[in-house]
Every structure is written in structure tokens, then in C-alpha cells.
Image 1 (cartoon, one colour):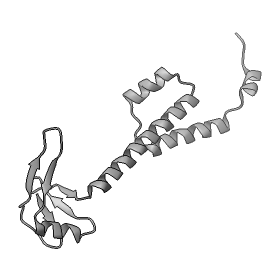
Image 2 (cartoon, rainbow, N blue to C red):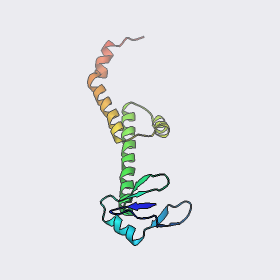
Image 3 (cartoon, rainbow, N blue to C red):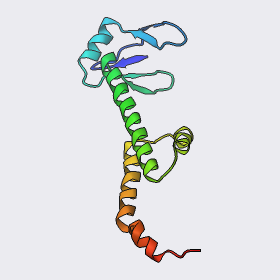
Image 4 (cartoon, rainbow, N blue to C red):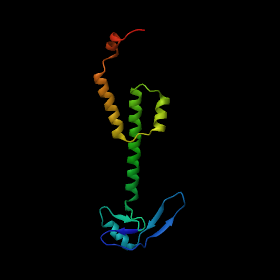
Length: 135
């Protein structure tokens, strides 16, 4: 992996894998480390695939993972809320969450807003009851 900073360094990073289940750790040379700490958003480029990666501190990465997990939880809570408003049972909600996980908070908020809009134009049950035909 080549570290790109203010200067271009050869790929001299030593890679040590802890285990197959854990991620590899790349130890940077002193020159590479100097390039990383002087950049706002340091990048690394895979020399084979030319894929670019952003280098972030572990605590920042952990914080991003926490935010993402919180967002996923928030999306699930919103999904459950609008599905309950539609009158779906817990088994149907669980099946929906399993088969079609929430895409994100914005999509779930859109569903809630759609239900709010529907509530605005739908007459109350008492009014609908006046017009209902009994069979």
C-alpha cells in the first residue's frame, strides 16, 4: 500500500495480520507517518487495484461505527413506528425487518410523513361509518 501525503512514498509498510478473523494492521515507516499527520484527510492507494482509502484514527473510526449503528437503530425504530400505525402485527413487522431491512432514516421518515399526509385527507372513522353500506 502506498501512502500519499505531501510526498509520494514507496510501499514499505510492514503488514502484520493478527488472525484471519481480525483486520490486518499496517505499520507505517517514519516518513509515511510524517506524511499522514500533516494531511487533513490522508489517503492510501492500493498499487494493484488503484483503490483509494482514507486513513483515519481508530477512535474516529469507532465513533463513525457508533454513529452508523445508531442510525441503523433509529431507522428500525422509525420502521416499527410506521408499521404499527398501519396496524401491522409484531410478526409482520419482524418479518419485514428481516426480509427488507430499513434503508436509512430518511426513507423511514418519508414513510411516516406519507402516513401523516394520508391521515390529513382521510375522514375519521365516524364520518366513514355514515357512508358505509352494511351487508
